[in-house]
Image 1 (cartoon, helix red, strand yellow):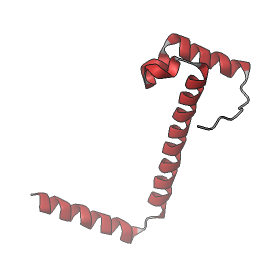
Image 2: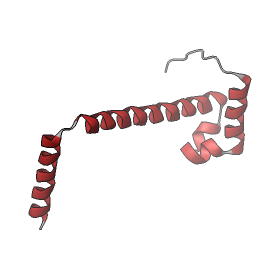
Image 3: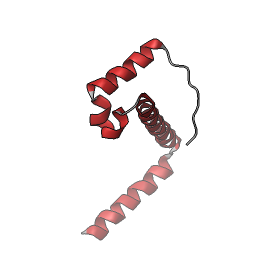
Image 4: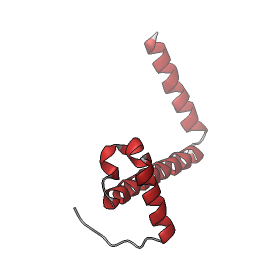
Amino acid sequence: MLRKAVPITPVDLAAVEDARSSGVLAEFLGSEVSRSEAAALSAILRLGLERLSEFVAERGYAALAVAQDDEDRAYAAAIRSRRRSAAE
């Protein structure tokens, strides 16, 4: 495990402490995260990274949808039709 120094504002630190002391992080992620401030910060970072990954995927899917032309849509429709026919 690698440790990094990260600047945190007093407001951020208060929010982390509130999440720890209220049990929200433990309820959301499991009991281990509220044991220490460092564990809470690590859990919050993981949550943020997961959300960022989801956002990047959503943008990718949106870009893919915009890039599709009529031929792509016709091909996708044909594949769906074949799958329905095969399932029946």
